[in-house]
Length: 526
Image 1 (spheres, one colour):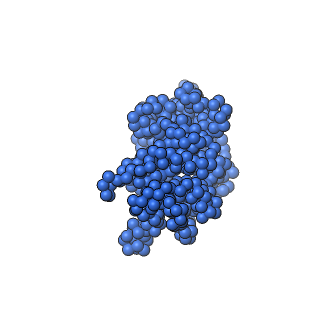
Image 2: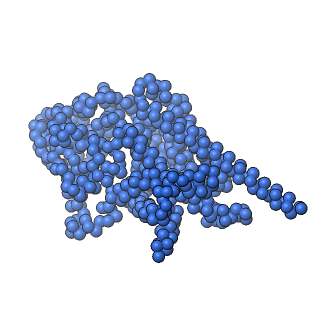
Image 3: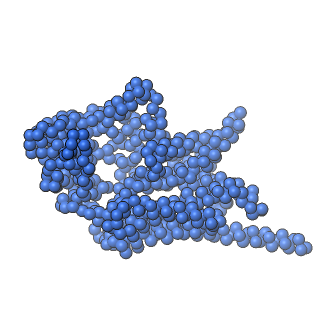
């Protein structure tokens, strides 16, 4: 019975991993890249300078700019710069022409040190990877549903894998290089065990994040079908009153930020919203930055009267259920992580991606061995081979092309950000076409080589198309720009090594087959 249960779990682990493996590889790779989404955005908008300034000074500059350019607006929104996000963004919404209408926001980027407007190139930057990894570039809510189902399958595959490998921790210390399928399996086991807590945490927390979407029964029952009441309680609206029509100067926003710090015991604001600026009923809402703690509080904000500075509302400390949900959200997103911990998140994410990829390679390799002598590959195995190559090396090529398009597309091009995304999917589609035309190992080697060249040449491309090259980055202390270039160079070298190793393995395999054929012919002749 026990052996039968383990065999059932092995079957579940194998087929769960295969059916969703290609999608999970894309989700985990783009999610891993999203841990450096702010740094990626900075590289893709090099015109926005990286400044070391206080948030109070930036907030004062933003207020001065808005008072000059948007004094009659109905709402201001100020996104403050941080250690990882260098830009200061201001948005304003004009007063509605008719009751019930909402005007379109105007957005400007400012230099946080001078308050001058900065024109950065249009791009989604790292936000594209973040959005893709849970929305899959699909309309709402279908992408979220599909990614959540994939996370459920991933969690099942992890649990069934733990049950299947009864010697999993012993196998962790076993690695036999140059043993073909055995080496792939050893690597799969080692990576799976090494960061097993990360695999479980990141998968389970993703389910917690979307629990209201996939498991709404308890919410519907508790709120008697009024789901909106649940969200109103979870995200309480700020106490914003209508404009009185009596003009009154807006107090310095930096002063209110200092008062908010006292409410948060030292926390800082990430966004400031001013409703009815210049009116006696102006309200100022300061949203707390969640980067200073693990538990993310979804509704942590403080509201003041903009004309008098009176405290109007402060979000209470979250209850235990919300704190638990916020803890899982914070662990999954990693906003609290400093540079070293963020790199650890990144490495663990790559390990999870590698675990999925090696599992797909192992599944195919075991079944290909049965058809080596005949040399005829069944259609279903050929299909898996095509999907393996396109979903792994093809995706890496698409990521590299996304970076290249940021530097090669004209800066003033209309719809530029959309065309960067289009370039990503065009490159991915062409890699699939290439894989269909070329056989397995040749396609692997060629696509890995192309990915290596594209990523490895990113520093050179950056130097040829912008003044923000490695030398400039080192001279100005822009370690984000330098780190991105060096990370791409390192990735290119690794992929080049992988292509070289795969090519050598193919040559050795071909030589072995020729030797075997020669021996057979000699034996037949004798």
